[in-house]
Structures are given as structure tokens and as C-alpha cells.
Amino acid sequence: MRLRINEYLLYNTPMKNISSKKLYVVSGSSGVGKGTVLKTFMARHPDFMLSVSCTTRKPREGEVDGINYFFISQEEFSRCVEEDKFLEWAEFAGNRYGTKKKFIEECLDKGKNVILEIETKGALQVKEKMPDAVLIFIAPPSLEELETRLRGRHTEDEETIQKRLSEVKKELESAKKYDYKVVNDKIENAIEELEKIIAGD
Image (cartoon, rainbow, N blue to C red; front, side, top):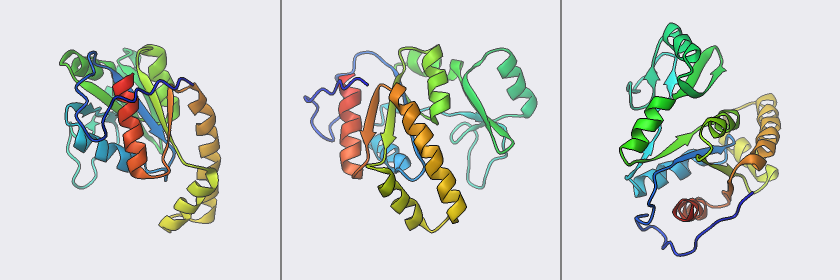
């Protein structure tokens, strides 16, 4: 794992020193706080763009096509797979999700740095097709701490928690192939570390 962190960045300042535009792929286990880290990062750095994935599932209340997801049919999704239009794709609970290569390329061509939030299997697929993509894994301080967080949510039964913890172990193994790892011990620290990594990459 490369530890290329440039210390010249001042905390919470615009990252104007990035000369080339890149795709940053961010992954993290359930309960690790990845969503909060990214939401705060994006609010502080509006010059970055969050990638929008395609999905075959129906929109949930409040979701907007083109903002939350691109909602497409199973037929269209299959056609995109056959025509190799996805950087990565996967199926969960009967629905399929994927990231279109054209969407990412157009964002980069427009001068936007792009952040793609995705699970580890998809991230490694992206790395194969776009070697210049930067993979960042947001990890818990420890499995014990993550278990405490999951139990503290009071939203899942014991079987589900154990399945999640088992999956986390697999994700941490996959994370060894990532370019960077950010340990989310505290949200502010994780955001600052993410800023330093991106500014120094």
C-alpha cells in the first residue's frame, strides 16, 4: 500500500493544486461512516463530482433520476453489459447496478475530479479498466469498534450483524489492493486524511 500523503495542504481549504483530473474510487464497510465522510467532503469541495450509477431497481420516494441514480430497464442494462459500456457492474437482491464508462469519461473531459462510491469488488473492476483510478478504502479503527457501532444502531438482528462482520473481513482483505487506507476513528480526522491524500496524489 502506498502512503503518499503530502502535508502542504491546510485543513478545510480548497484543493486548487490538483492539476490533472482523476477518478477517485472510495469504498468502506457498512457502519464505518463512509457516507458521512463523503457527504462532508463534497460539501467542502463542490469542484468535485459524485458519480451517478445506473440501476434497474425502482426509484424510492424522493429519489431523482440522474441525481441519485440513472434508473434503467433490465433490457437496457443487459444491452449495456453486452456492449461493454460499464466500468463495473454487480447484482444485489435481484437488481443490477453499474457505472457507465462514458459518464466518467465525460466528467473528466469537462475538467471534473470524480468520486465513485462503490463496494470493493466493483472498485477492483474499475482499476482493471482504468489503471489511473485512485482507490481509497475507509476502514474502521478495529473490528471490535465496528461491531459496537453496528450494535449501537439497533437496526439489525444478531445473524445480520455476524454476516456483516464476516463480509467486513473479506473487504479488509480486498482493501490490501487499494492505493490508500483511511482509518475512520473520528469523522474530522478521516475527512482531513482524505483531503491530504487527494491533494498529494
